[in-house]
Image (spheres, rainbow, N blue to C red):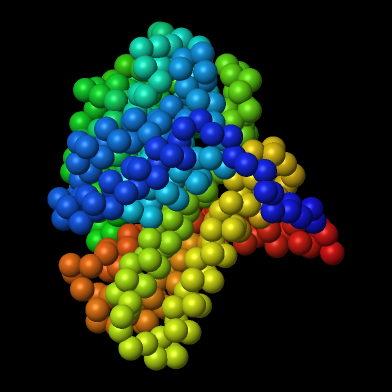
Amino acid sequence: MEVIEMSNAPLPDTGLLGASEKLGTLAAQHAAEADASRTLSPEIVDGLREAGFARHFVSARWGGREGTFGELTQGVLNVSRGCASTGWCASLLAASSRYAAHLPEAGHEELWGSSPDTCLVTGLVPMGKAEQVDGGHRVTGRWDYISGVDFADWALLCASIPGDPAPELRFFTLPRGSFEVLRTWDCAGMRATGSHTVIVDDVFVPAHLSFARADMEAGRSAWSTQPTHNIPFPAFGGLTFIAPAVGAAEGALKAAAAVLRGKRVLEATQVDLVRASAKIDTSRFLVEQNARVIDERTFAPALLARNQRNAAFAAEQVTEALSGLLSATGTRGMSESGALQRFWRDINAAASHVALRYDITRAAANYANALFEES
């Protein structure tokens, strides 16, 4: 099996890295308020736009940055160290714009013709139904867990169209105002992601605002030759969700060290702290490895399977690391006025995402089969 070595090449700088560091600092200052209010403040939402997460994968002809996954990953890590919910929304904003690049050219113009900073959110699970009509489709359905919908300009939603022998799955792009938002998100962690429910009731979507899910999964775009618009879904799916959790774990490590600083620390506590730090570092290295596979376009089946494994394993590692940090800090770490307990809740919520499950993503089966083929 091919091994990709660690690269020391500098990341291309579109401005995201510096902007994300500033946003991470600001997000940390607002994190407790965001957790309590279950929403990101207008200042943080403006910061997400200004940092360039929405435009990161948008084509340059529309004013976008045509950025890399390596740079995006570092930007998400920077923000998530301050606030996991803000980092989560940053990651999904970029991913949603990348999905929408599969739209026909007229769809690109409608989304980004006036601004590359259009905020899109995505419902990946086909929870709705669509009917083909003259000029497009009529869409109806209910989509749960649509992160960032509170400030979204558009929603990109997957629905099924009856067919023989099997239904066709397509994405449909709907502007704000054409769908209803039910404030259903009540999770104990990632509270400020605003992952509410979207309701669509028999809305017409023109053909230029729709594309086949099969194109997204295979990584083929008929309307863009930009490399980041032509990537198979298994390569990057888990990265979108694990990068915020890893960044938050790095923030948690810093918070734990602050709790213990100046205290008498037993050797057992030191062991807990150091083990947790190693698990967090391991997770970050795996996440960075995934980004390199994507940017270098090494889409061999074994490496796609490894990307899935890396994401699932990193999710395990960061949750175990947080348990170690709580063991090290004791009741001080669970103080409601402190950041550590918030990171603990956020990371456990993020790591429960279906995209980070060995079984649902077939990460275990796919990578095991790759190992068998190499033996």
